[in-house]
Picture 1 (tube, one colour):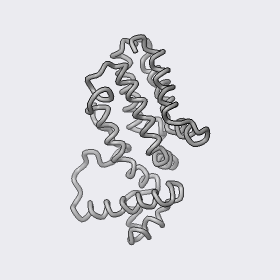
Picture 2 (tube, rainbow, N blue to C red):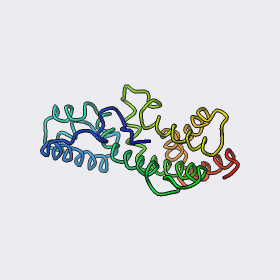
Picture 3 (cartoon, rainbow, N blue to C red):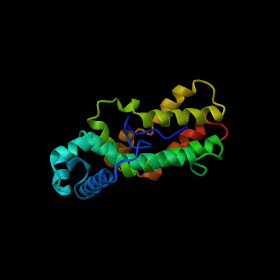
Picture 4 (tube, helix red, strand yellow):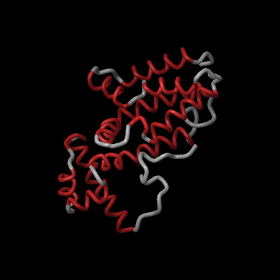
Length: 203
């Protein structure tokens, strides 16, 4: 299993940029992060970014393509790190722990990820032409859950069970619980543990 970019053409493993292009990209991203921190994800526009970075609006659109593209780029570093942790990192999230422990750790880590980056993920998906359920990282998460279910000995339709489990980790659902209902992340994690331990006998 290898790292999967948020969308085709995202930077995990693409050709290195020229040094000046890389500097310009980082300057734009730094300005975008500052704007998100100051005003929130929903308030940030391409015009605001061009003004903050002191570049033309066309430069911003050439770099990111759209507002959704900007949000995806902001999200890509966090997504790459999350993937590294569950594919290559230490147990229990990474390899080396029993499948049940890895599945428990995956859900808990995913909830923390959405708590921190969920608004960016929502904004990135909002205007994307791609169905969010078919986005490469989502497919990877589903495949990872399915693999752990198979390793745990759950042979009866693990693909569909993985789909059902993954739905409980959907960013929109988690954000709704966190924001609209005030459910703390710890309670969501406890619910995930209850769900997994009831499903897998060896947990």
